[in-house]
Image 1 (cartoon, one colour):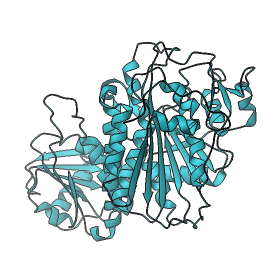
Image 2 (cartoon, helix red, strand yellow):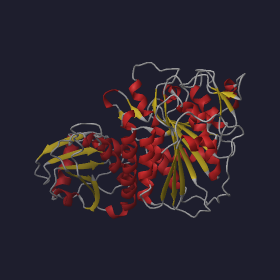
Image 3 (spheres, helix red, strand yellow):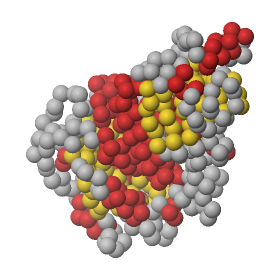
Length: 506
């Protein structure tokens, strides 16, 4: 789907030949003398058109416009959030296969952020997954023109919007794929494909290399599956080598049965979405490839399956993490934190300005926040504030939750340095407290996206969140004071676990 900006007022839009014309009418609309403006004014006066976001008035072959279909839709105060509501409602009415060319016009001056919002909303409303269908029918909409009198001023927002769409749709693609079409090896191949873009590089480590690093916690999760693990290292080098990078760590459990602590069968198919954190990291790098900002970003993805075969890790087993800390695995379904902790230790070598992990980590976060906001945890107030602001600007919001030391008391173990779970109460927080034990040397934040990464029911599918939030955050670092990178260090585990029984990556 191709998006273009056109500097056209309402009179100009009315003369453009297209399959559908959507006009966003805000409260501040002032009608001109052209026929389309007068039609809008009359509809508002008669009460047939309200400016409340999403209120519609549809017409077929109206004399006020050349377009086959004309949709007038209220856009409220013209803010990005209310424009999103308006566009979603309007696009739903013009999704017929015959609509291949669409014009969307702002009835008056457009807020620059609203242009980005229109692009992302149109893409979201027309997205279709096709990869594993025998007779795929993808989106029919091919061309979208965004029209406003001052369209030229919004070029940067259009570029940001289209790049975000590319990233979100890559994240959706890999999250939506069934687990047999999105194995750790396939995920590594997808990451390597990103290295074809300028400024991007990728390295994929297999079981042998991961064992040499001493990632005993990560390996313990993978040992019950026939699919070999992969540890993916992505790098975007847009600034000088002396500039410290931001590190993004995405949980990549490509399927989660719960292991020996097996999950109930109902809706277990949705555990293919347990790698949405990893998918969001891929999405951010895809967007960076288009935008080419002057920043450095590292992406780390520990990818494996969590399966319950005869070699699977057992409840009560003690494993040694890359940091040297030992962990009693009381619940094998709390595996995400076990793969993330080794990736967080690995991240130390980059001496990052900040590290953010992204994971579908806990059902407790879904209970706390539902599907509206992602859970965000950080002991660094400036990092937390930046992530909160990025979420608001991207319309991909998060909410900060506490990290009081008392929440970590439940992680005590009689047989290891810590347990991997601490009971049901405050489960999202105790999971974050576990991860915090591996981040003492770095500014760190944790995003629990268990409630926001995908939808269930009739609309089942990945949302692509939090690509927008992460992208806004890392782009904000381009304007932040430069933080020099220290010399890279080689992190060595204090105690290495036994080598895994899987063969080395080919």
